[in-house]
Length: 118
Image (cartoon, rainbow, N blue to C red; front, side):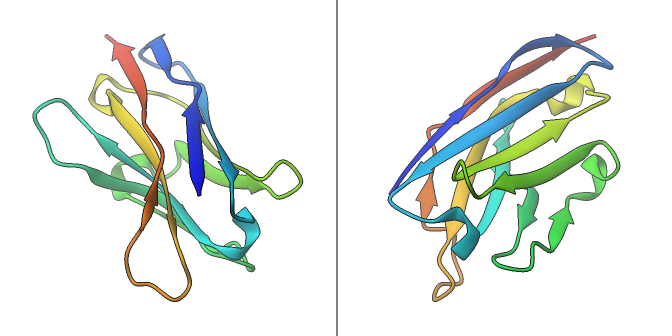
């Protein structure tokens, strides 16, 4: 399984970015997938997830209404659309996969850096 995250960059507060996570070795529609982030000096934290098959979505409270997680099954890619970005959203963002047989996210992408300037 390989997860290739991309789309990070430098953006001003209030701006938008879309992160992508291209998967190989798995079919994204069959797995529970998520985005996590790790800010400087902090532990990795949950951002958003999408369930397999029925696409239920879940968000960390601080990103509700600003971020949208989705996937394109034809492209086998997970996305995170981020809007109204704030400096506190600055972090390395990771995509992750949880097999349905597991309670843990077992596969991780390499991370993509998002920097929001004030």
